[in-house]
Length: 436
Image (cartoon, rainbow, N blue to C red):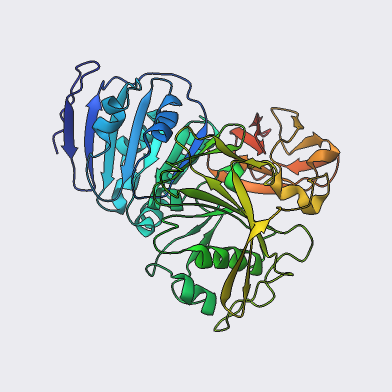
């Protein structure tokens, strides 16, 4: 293949470059700029694009380069991002993955690494998982999230893969009625904390197109499955088709839509506060029962406004404005809603059992460089959290629970080089140098 590079600075001319494994559509300046992006996560329900939410997304690129990645379609976002919204960016490129081999292409990886903003378009999320998981693309995306701390997100399938847990759709779509009747039916394919590593979304599974069809039942079943399968916490974020949820670097979600002209909402799902929180009956070929005194899930229904004025705090999963609380429960496969809830009555404290809702963590790690071990010092407010290690490319290495004021972390299995420790929104770099 002959690659043609266009070096016209700040050009609005759009060029397409094709190879067997991917297709590239480029608009703007081909010279990479080095700017510091602002971290953020963009989650859209999948039917249409909200201009103000998209402006929020583009502004976080800080004039840098925007990359759209997808497994179908073409360059539909290029002009929209580059010129239609009035936000200055250096370039917009769309890379369409024609097959999984593109995930090993050096040009594709370099463009992901150079981007300040990454957007995943709609399509089939099973393609995204099958093409990108356990590949250099996954490593580059996690480097963008956790090291570069750029803005990232997507719509429809691009939203569906953002959570720590995700519906992979390997066997096709899952429907609420089937999920409630049998939580382990063949369509309920769920991945767990093995793809994108957003700290604030570690316990979250997302869902999209929430109003067409009604997906509340299957989303609640996703959460019940996560808890039933042994994970300590399960949380949910969902959007109606024309709604976008924008999460800033502090963990505050802003909900964009066109309410009150249209009934547009985002939903934030969390279990109750008192153990046990999981389902009473969640097994193969049995209708789901997740009742917990008719308070299995507390759900904040946030109205999507033009300026994104409705908010939800992902640091505590309780503080919210611009909507109302509901209670959801399932009895014998029947989905139920109480639309007049006062919300969860459980102030977040320093108790370990409540800690999955908190993200502001303080810790100190030393020495650096280290050889066989390093020491983690923290405060009581940080107990019950996982300290996560990433390599220099942002690839997940391991989790370690923080259970005391001082913890020794063995580093003998780590190769020489530098790594990142992350707990909540706090990141610390350290170096491993083994003595010969």
